[in-house]
Length: 201
Image (spheres, helix red, strand yellow):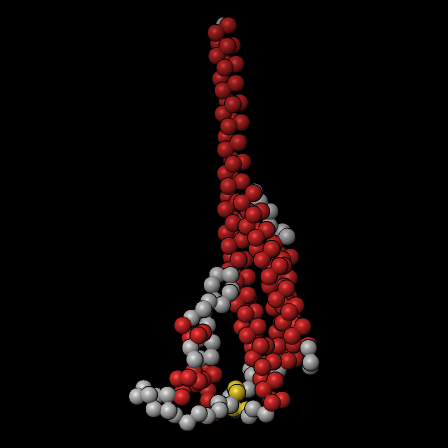
């Protein structure tokens, strides 16, 4: 009788330990699954941030061209109609390449001297210099300002979405790096672009 009671107690104890172990394993599985989902979600958010940042880089370049155009226009440089040279405009951005942080990568064309090449042909003969008319910018100041506000709102929406993502140390680290990149780099660049647009307008 004593051995039966002892066996029952041992079986009950083993069942309790097994139940606790199963419960612990289930909790670990749930935590792993939540962590995996959070990391996957953060990677998707990061790809969205990179896409928005690339549009910010394009806007930055377009605003610089717009400001240069305004300075040239004051200096008397004539305009070139967009419709007259649509092939040039259609591939205007094809030579720009960006890395995963939305920084423009240098190409061999960045240091290419077009004026020097136009002065001499393949045989070394001097060619008459001519002035190329500036392309009319694709945006006005007001349109560029509106685009910058739209990009700013997209970044702010991403930041508010990131507030809801919770997780372990790795999730927090990735989340913090995305938030830091947006707040210190991209929003600061938007402020600079908006200041450039509003200056001398």
